[in-house]
Structure formats: C-alpha cells, structure tokens
Image (cartoon, rainbow, N blue to C red; front, side, top):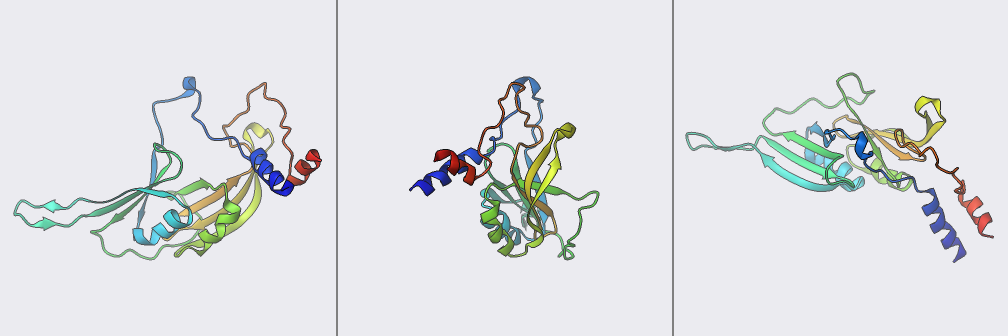
Length: 209
C-alpha cells in the first residue's frame, strides 16, 4: 500500500506546470490555430495520429465537387480531417488529401530543409507510448527517446527534455518530446520560492519515512 502511495505522490510532484494563456496585457489578436499536412493518403496517416498518438478526429469531410452547369456530377476534390489533443481552439492538426491529382512520388526521409516543416508534440507518457508509435504502419523512426538538454532563454540554466523523432507516412518530421522542466516562455514569477519537490521517487520515499 505504501509503495502505491509513493508512486501516486511522485506522479503528482513531478508533473510539469500546465500550459496556460499568457497574461491579458501580453496578448495579441492572433492565435496559431492549426497546422495542416497535405498527405498522399489520409488512411495511411490516421494509424499514427489517431490511433498511436490518440488525437481525436473532430472533422472528416469531402470538399468540392457538386453539380456542373450541364447537370453533370463533379466528384469531391479534397478530403480534410482535423484532429485535436487538449484544446478546442488552438493546436489542431489537419490532414488534407487532394483527390484529383495523380499518384505522387514516394516520400524522402531526411533532415528537414528550408520550405519543410518540423512539428513538435509534447507526449506526457512518451516512455510508455513510444512502442505503439514505433509500431504504427508507415512510420519511420529517426531517434528513439533520449534525454537531452536545451539552453534556457538568456543562458539561465537548461531545459531538460526526453527527445524522440519520427517521419510520418509522407516524410514529415515530427518531434515527440516529454518536457521534464519548464518550457521556454513559461517564466517563474520573480518571487517564486525555490523548488522543494523531491528529485526522484527514492527521495520522496525517504521523506515519508
């Protein structure tokens, strides 16, 4: 029973501060709502984004088409799928498939270059979830979960991250990270007290004895 209690308390103590909007006086009238990938085949993309990552499909529709002036039916030209994680307004992912173009060349898996995109996702359970991500069809692993450190803004310390990276079915480079400290831009208040949380489960257990 005590072991279970220690584990539960450790999860609470080690949780990173939740994301939140910036203060009212720092806001601008712009939000980054969605990133949309133009993909070869949405059905090859969903096993990663919907099934392995657990994003929720909130929109899946055929767009375009209709009836021409001569009465002939025109087929849809686009399929658009939207997925979300934890926010109903920002941070959505779109998958768009053009239905009226010829088959495209196979993707290339390499370092992202100018004109290409890197999408970064924070995965709180990366340690456990990565096996499902790696096993998803059409996924190519670039880096398995590895602890790294980024320099904090202004050289004020380090930002520890459990880093991993993959290419999806279309060669899009996706960073899948687990933030282990405070993210850039999430500054502590000037009068914030020193962090007294136990550094690991062993230290927490010793404090409880």
